[in-house]
Image (cartoon, rainbow, N blue to C red):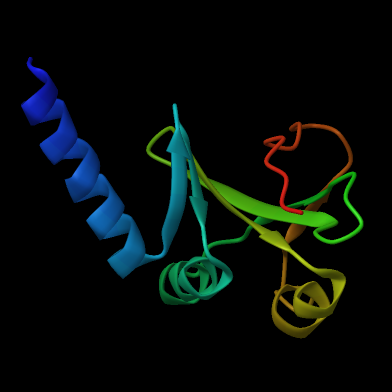
Length: 105
């Protein structure tokens, strides 16, 4: 594969990310913006995992696994309470899956 083919692939991924709410892809983990993540949860009736993070600004990571890919979004306390806290049967985890390590400042 040459650099032009790689560049086209990267640009296609960036374009799809901007249009579809994908912030980043690392290995088998996909970071989505809150709106996209919430839409996927709602449309597919997915029960997410809720993980505490060591971050003042984004203290929560909410995730689910589909086809061996981890989809997640990070949340402020306010948005978490407003949008996610009321999801029935959501699973609050205490260390069974480590946070992705993604940090925003």
